[in-house]
Length: 275
Image 1 (cartoon, rainbow, N blue to C red):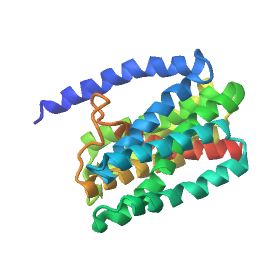
Image 2 (cartoon, helix red, strand yellow):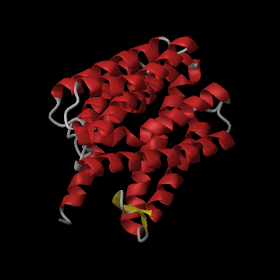
Image 3 (cartoon, one colour):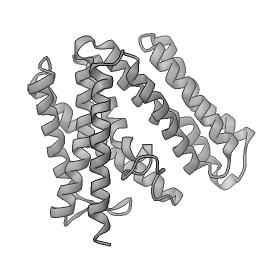
Image 4 (cartoon, rainbow, N blue to C red):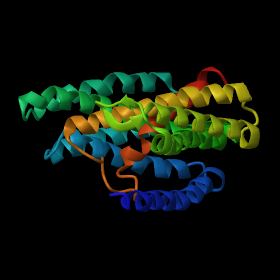
């Protein structure tokens, strides 16, 4: 068992070494739509993983859920600044979950879970990932920097939490949901997120005050950890270990972006309300 941990860590590190240059190229070299060309399929795969957990065996509803998610992503991306369109999306999307479930009832014992997942899932997975691409496009020169900061807040937090929990972890954080997570790991994750936020303010996003960057990293990092726990809750309640196996060493797309979903929401709201 002990031999598997270093091997898994090596796979995770190798994946990151391959992915990071590609992401930097998308942010700073590729056309503005390049990031969305990555975020869109990632969001669709994430939604497919979600519906595979909540609607096992019902491929028709899974496909319907992905189609709804695709329509929502395209609408949010191309009408980001139209409040009427966004309000319509936020009101219509939750209604579709119960409506589709009525058409494909299946097991009545799981109907409420499936209806809520289908109505809420696209909002939870698709909108935050789409907003990353919208930030890059809409925030001018600072757009790539805000996206990079969001990514590093989530990923530094995940990595810092992993190492702090592995070497210092003694007290369980939320054992019923995620038995391996510890309070020490959570603190280490927040510290790593703060390092990511400080680096952003001092190096490549100098228009962002350091105090704002640190506050964003703490709130975004904490929300990212909550997103990680929320996905663990979903997996445990549906009897799934990983959401998928598309990302070597990381499981599925949802396993990789669970912290990013809430962190990106926090950063996007900051750019809209405070910046």
